[in-house]
Structure formats: structure tokens, C-alpha cells
Amino acid sequence: MKRRPEPELMDSAEQALAYAKADFAASNSLFIKLLKRLDPGALKGATALDIGCGPADIVTRFLRAYPHARCDALDGSQPMLDLAQETLDKLPGIASRCRLIHDTIPSAQLPSRHYDLVLSNSLLHHLPDPQVLWQSIKETAKPGAPVLVMDLMRPSSAAWIEALVATYVDGEPEILRADFRNSLFAAFEPKEVTEQLEEAGLPCLEVAVVSDRHLAVMGRLPA
Image (tube, rainbow, N blue to C red; front, top):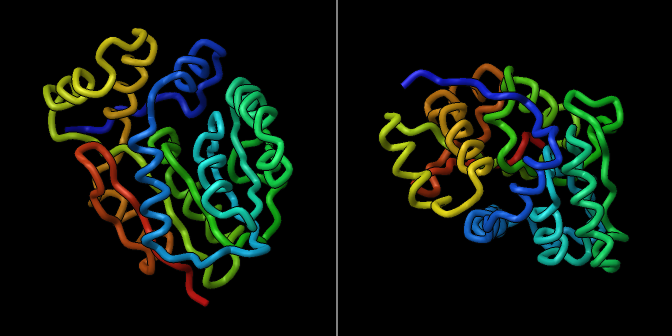
């Protein structure tokens, strides 16, 4: 099934709030499990980068799991960052280790070869040019840094998309149902992501199907 791109940013406050209120506990918990499987170590004194942090649920889960790490969290949507700040304001011990950055990639606000770990969740399918993400990872991560990118993967048919919508967002507001449907149409297939990595010069990263609707890109950059 052909990919159907969607807007790069969730710029409306209504969209951002619907996304933030949705129950993504299962998929976000899976993200942290995959990170632990990648075995980045204790990350004591490490600084991570979360590209496309949204309302900061992944950020807070990461900083809870790795209490000696810090994280720079970047998003291009100000409504999303406003919700992220509300979340962090309730968690002072975590907020002190997180810096929110309002920008899109490539970003001049991100230092080169600086980050000990690079994360991204549910951003890839929003990008008109996926190479922007892969090149940003290459430019911002230290040599040998672990990388974890998780995203939706495009089903083989519109009927399967509707089945996933019915399974995972049944009863949610229509704006969230529409966003989820559009995101599934905009997502990439695993083979397409593998081709993106080859083009980016990142054969060190592996693509894996990790749920009925998610794929993950995992590995370490060359030392």
C-alpha cells in the first residue's frame, strides 16, 4: 500500500492535548524495554537527546529509569512543549535533568557529536524526508553512542489500518482516531527504513518489528 504523508507537526493545541491524554503506556513502556535490551549501561553523567519528544512521556520514563542521566528534548510543536513543561513542573527531580528545546531538525541548537545516547519515538512517519532524522542522529551523537528509534509501521491494507484503529483507539476522541489513522498511512514499512539506513550510511543500525504496529531501529554508531 502506498504511503500517504501527513503534516510534519502537530501544531494545534487540540491535537496536542488529545495525544497527551491518550493511553500510550503499553507502547511507551515497550520503548524503555527496548532501550534496556540495547544495554546502554548506567548512563551515569550521560546526556541523551530525544528528537520529537512530544508531551515528554518518553523523557520522564527515561529519566526515571536512568536517574544519573540528563536529557535534551526537542520538538517543533509549541503546544506539545507546553504540555511537556506542565508534566515536568510536577516532577521537580526529573525536570532538573531535562532541557526542552523548541525547534525542528536539523537544528542549530543541537551541538555536534555531543550526545551519549539518541532517542526518538513516533517522529519518523511525520517527516517528508526521513534522511533529516538519520543525518541529525549522525551529526549529534558521539561515536559509539547507542541509538533507539521507534515508530509506527505501515500496514499492508486500509482494512488492516481500520482494524488497528478499532483495536487501539476505539472510544477515543475523533481527532485522536483520525490522527492515528493518518499516522498509519504515513508510516514506513521495515524494508523502506532499511533502505533509508543504507542511504544514510548507517548499516550498523538494525530494523526490527516489535509489535503489530511498531518497528524499531536499534544499535550503536561506529566508535
